[in-house]
Length: 272
Ligand SMILES: NC(=O)c1ccc[n+]([C@@H]2O[C@H](COP(=O)([O-])OP(=O)(O)OC[C@H]3O[C@@H](n4cnc5c(N)ncnc54)[C@H](OP(=O)(O)O)[C@@H]3O)[C@@H](O)[C@H]2O)c1
Image (cartoon, rainbow, N blue to C red; front, side, top):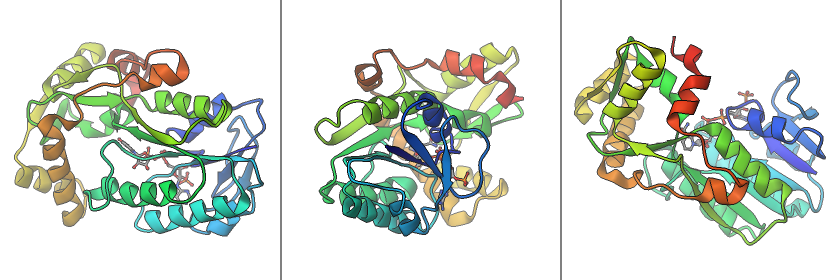
């Protein structure tokens, strides 16, 4: 059986739909509507509830958004999976994850290291930023950031789900990391231009120095320490570290990842 955590999220919901008709089960915190596969109540914050769903030979998709207890909870679930004799864990990390990194990159670095040492066969998906974030970053025709002029890669979360489905339903091959990218990397002014072209109205990117971006995020309600880290992370990504693309999505799924234009066409309403 394939057990899917985070099944109500941006990747998990799409993955559950792709697994329709397979021996698969979603682990959700509260009753969910039709996910395409059956669901049972279990919570990453109570790792034993996930462990209780696992049997020898199962495959586990381990994914959730980030919260302060994320690293402890994910490590504990990995331990539960090891004890249960799970055949493979497929998890979602982030490109460049490393212990000590800023925000999610540091948390994922810790969890990824734990998984690699767990003895459970694994596939660690390391995507770039999700195109699904773009509507939230864009307000009143303006998108603010501290990325400078470097090309930055975004991936459609649906392609991460497709890569996860391929890994979970194929033979559990050798363990490894998979850097997932969209097909193109663009500077943020070009991204804004593309958003404007598809929406049919003016759109622009405004680049801010880190202290001003921090203040901007605070005005939008983000606590200061997190705002400062996020702005600094944007500036780090602005050194071009997310500029290159990989063929991993196509290698795993047999088809290329969706370009930004396809995402925008499918999600026009999210920008209104
Ligand atoms: N967003 C990006 O640009 C980006 C880029 C690279 C990597 N990533 C990584 O991708 C992963 C997914 O990120 P996302 O923000 O898009 O989230 P998401 O996949 O939309 O995940 C949300 C899911 O996590 C579940 N969840 C949250 N807290 C939970 C908890 N305490 N216990 C159990 N389930 C919990 C939610 O359940 P409920 O419905 O019950 O709340 C929901 O199913 C993260 O690890 C993130 O670091 C994100």
